Image 1 (cartoon, helix red, strand yellow):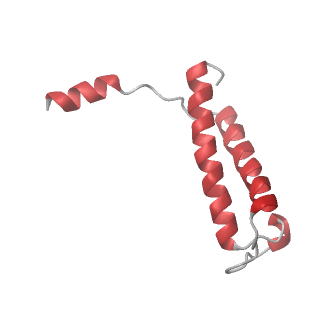
Image 2 (cartoon, rainbow, N blue to C red):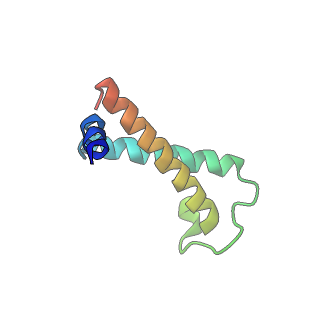
Length: 87
């Protein structure tokens, strides 16, 4: 029980949601989709999307992969900018 109390005392506070946080996450997702558009060899493999022209002809697996990468990048950017005091 004392370890749990010790861990709770050492957890840093995180930034609360704001429009700045949303802009950082959206920008990271757009950057990841653009990166995937130029680097994924078979973008249209797998099931298609309802409007593939909106995502540059990407299929569902490519979109899920790129947005997953975008969320990982976004979480890192948000934590880094928050610890630097920029958010």
